[in-house]
Image (cartoon, rainbow over all chains, first blue to last red; front, side, top):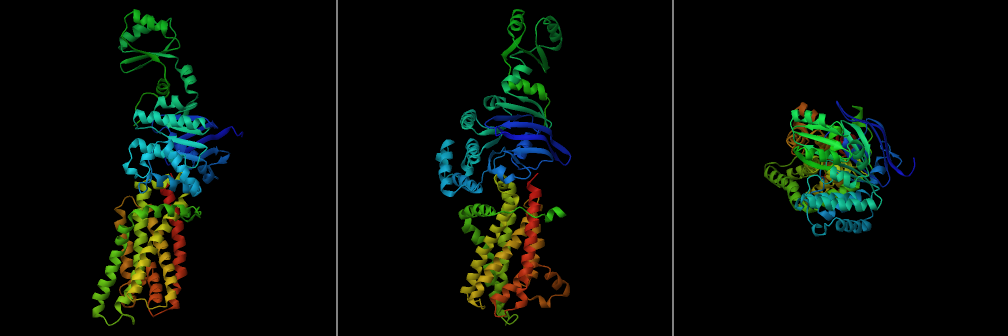
Amino acid sequence: MSTKTMIIAKNLVKKYEEITAVDGISFVINRGECYGFLGPNGAGKTTTMKIINCMSPLTSGNVLVCERHVKTKPREIKALTGVVPQEENLDPDLTVFKNLLVYARYFEVPSNEAESRVEELINFLNLSEKIDSHINELSGGMKRRLLIARALINNPEILILDEPTTGLDPQVRHMIWQKLRQLKKNGITMLLTTHYMEEASQLCDRIAIMDKGKILIEGNPVTLVEEKIGKEVLELRINNAMENELLQKLNRFEFTHDRVGDTLYMFSRDGRELLQYLVSNDYPLVLHRPATLEDLFLKLTGRGLRE
Amino acid sequence: MKSIFKVPDISFRAYRVWQRNRDSYKRFYKANLIGSLGEPVMFLFGMGLGIGGYLASMEGVSYIQFIASGIIMVTAMYSATFECTFGSYTRMMGQKTYDGILATPLTVGDIVMGDILWGATKSLISGGIMLAIIIIAGLMKGPVIFIIPILMLIFLVGLMFASMAMIATALSPSYEFFSYYFTLTLTPMFFFSGVFFPLEKFPLIIKGISYLLPLTYAVNISRSLVTENFSYIALSGFPLLLALTIILVIVAVNMIEKRVVK
């Protein structure tokens, strides 16, 4: 195993009694890379992250983190990792400052070093004004920033982010993205789960789209969209009868299509001619836009509700 | 069954959890101390002087002195139990503190051991203050040097009831469950461990049951150290309590692990 590789997972399986949460997935994550797990709720993203961080034992398969096996070296792996959990679990009995200081002790950071590190991180995440506040006095965005600060207290090599910006306003979200990009520049390896396709596009070098415990597709988000969807999307709000008639007339154009409810989506590599035809023939064109990760996501995981 | 007795992974890092609990205790210690000392002090003087006024002596000592040694143990029992039922359950379920700690190099064993050590420390604080009150009131008749083994006993009783409470916490679906635990486990010990009256005159069945209650042994040791009636036989309860405590710690770690690691 080269030092370039950070995490190797082979045939990873996790079963909870009757349910198979992760169903034999394999992946490799490189040092300094940001790798995103996307998928509907219940796809197995969080479980995969928990196994990597030795919070949850695997049922079968193999996971190596920094050349250490999750089964035999959990304390060492956890010492190298920082985790921003999906569910906020800051210590409500302690102040912002104490939260970080107590956490530093769990990692055996020497106390003089810990204090300067805490102050540095509080500044990095713009929380200086709240340093002596208790957790219940913080807003959702501040709590999330504090969780990120807490995850960095041990100078981790790997940062695990489970939906780091869910439920936050756009200002905080963009600020967090900035900070994460800055961390990435410093060489930290990041693992991310998210429901925001924009977040994945902004941050991830590679993504894996998961569903029902399996990885459906893996690769660079931009390349994947281009390969699997195309460059452009045309959205038309027309009924079924009109659709059949239209599609027959469009034989000469190269595109794929998908109908959802009242809308026909047409995906193509070069939509200009197609667009011109539709406009000149007075079709009720709703939208012409670039193809996104969300198109790929919905194509692969379907549009049915999961919950 | 075997998994309940698995050797737990406990390290020095349990101390980090103890430190965390100490830091959060600093905020509430006044309310906490009044809560855990108010009742035993009132029992000691209320019953000791009230009932004591009608009794010449009990087992050769004044009634207040008779119950003083037992009340130290009861104080230790309740302090550790409150900490490791309501306190630990809140940290495990409500605040998700355990989940936060598990993302660090600590194991479930470290967390549970840290909470048990903290529970025992709270026993030591309230039991130690009780002992001081008893000494000031002139109720301590054993040699001064016995203060050391009494404090050790308070800590051991704290460890034992903290571990027992952690097992209740592992089984508890909600806070309501703890009222069963208190009524069915602690209250019988409170009444039938010889704290308020000697066991000798109880019917045979209750006497038999009382010898199954670990608090009985603790009360006997305490009484032997606090009153003039020192007895080596009572001291033989020490290794028994120690052995039981070790088993309870192991079971507690394994049961909490089953609950939090999925």
